[in-house]
Length: 306
Image 1 (cartoon, rainbow, N blue to C red):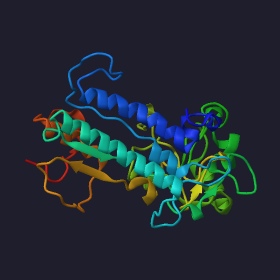
Image 2: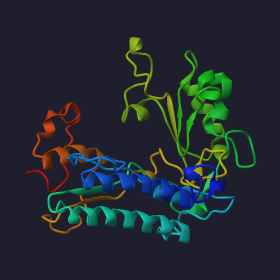
Image 3: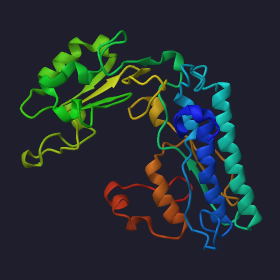
């Protein structure tokens, strides 16, 4: 670990790159026909990959109290530390390409690069942390509702599901409308932009409640969408978060590369759920054999329909 003072792999800009490089080495070994440790021969996988943490951590890390990561403006101009994370990932992907070419696998390999989420806010000048307790920066929705509305599991056990959004499951027998009214009266201190409940919630999700009453317990009773830049965290190491509906969370890059593909940008709206059926189509398999594809009607990415 380059910086032993970082605390863990994700607490330092260099440490997280070191962690990612361990995974990069495993992929390079697979391409070379070895096990992930490179200590034995193995068949090259038909589908393989890895996740990078460098950019995710670089976007939100506050290290030793210094906001060294992220971006300097809303246009996404990276700080020097953030640029280092991007360049590292770019170089790692270059290692994959070079190794595929060396093993004569490049022409027969499709590379897909995407992300499961972004980080909000991109413009870190708008970052506004609201800690998990009353304080100078306000109070999160879970603390506003407290024991009067939330079960102990939401407060003292697993804890509330809050970062740049707040998902709230109420105690049985409590009034959703009363909880919403309380949140609305404290909207300013909690940085609340929108409150979804009842019909507005059910346009996107199943109705909340117990299955015996026709509800879906996975659906929260209330979703609080904060103003852009508000993050419900008491952490001193983050300047952005993910998990909400903000544009910065939900818009991510998606690149598909193969020597047989013509270089072009497609502006058609797509979703990351389309990656899985696209991989099946590339492998000559029928995407409709996936239950989720049939139930949700998920299409392959544009350009791979045939």
